[in-house]
Amino acid sequence: PLEPGVLTAEPLAVASIAGRNVPVDWRLTLPGRGLDVTLSALNPNAWMSTSVPYWEGPVTVSGSHSGRGYLEMTGY
Image (tube, rainbow, N blue to C red):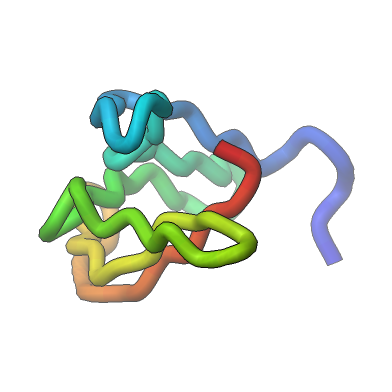
């Protein structure tokens, strides 16, 4: 488990989608574990207009670690 406040998530870029500003690039840092990465959406416009609207899509990871992932966000 992580202590509160040790992981930071900072939005770096937003896309205007369906009248909403949705963060599509993020910087995640966890200094105690040597993590400082940027998550970047492959398709920033991956908005899902369902009964509970949300954003989902693949991301690339770069920085202190590299890779690929999948991000889902609600509340925008």
